[in-house]
Length: 233
Image 1 (cartoon, rainbow, N blue to C red):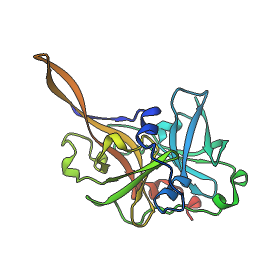
Image 2 (image 1 turned 135 degrees about the vertical axis):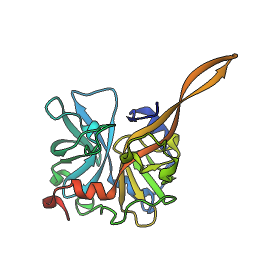
Image 3 (image 1 turned 90 degrees about the horizontal axis):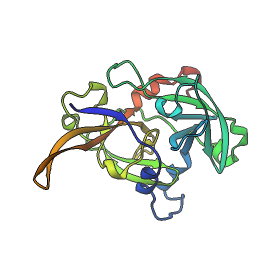
Image 4 (image 1 turned 60 degrees about the horizontal axis):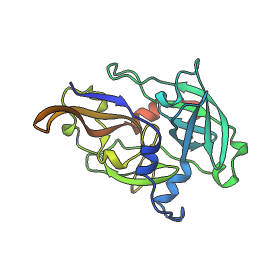
């Protein structure tokens, strides 16, 4: 059985993207300004990610935000931790194609520095293309990757998981932003790790292990359709 699962959180992502310090004036590094941490309350032992779109709006994965009836969330941005309100929430599902693993939340942008309040992150107009170079950003750093061909995704995976990036070990986890490397627009939000079991020999005995194939991201056209019209800018 091959499967897609919501990603793990925490130190793995931070270490993978723990790049040497660079000036955020670099166009690639400047994407980190939009990357935020999303923290559930009561606090759990992991930290999720999200992307600041502008106008006090943050986009993350639905399973990062959690069920709003059980959790509240806070957003760590620009050195502050601000309360957040869930405006719209989808749901992660490995089966139902209609479920969208996205959550749109709002924060009080009056508490942000003016330099950040004036910023807007556009959603890419074009869908992802196989081979396209991308940048994945979290607050701690960035990593380059590329969109893989849908033909490389295991055939029995739900068709909605066909937009994915390679380099599983070196890119961010759930809620991280995937950006077009040239246009610097938001191409997607990372949602799930696609894995498949393998059998290998250890000391002459077969051992079942899990091989990570790719990371699925919710693509720009689905993001654009998910965000209510009143929040478009």
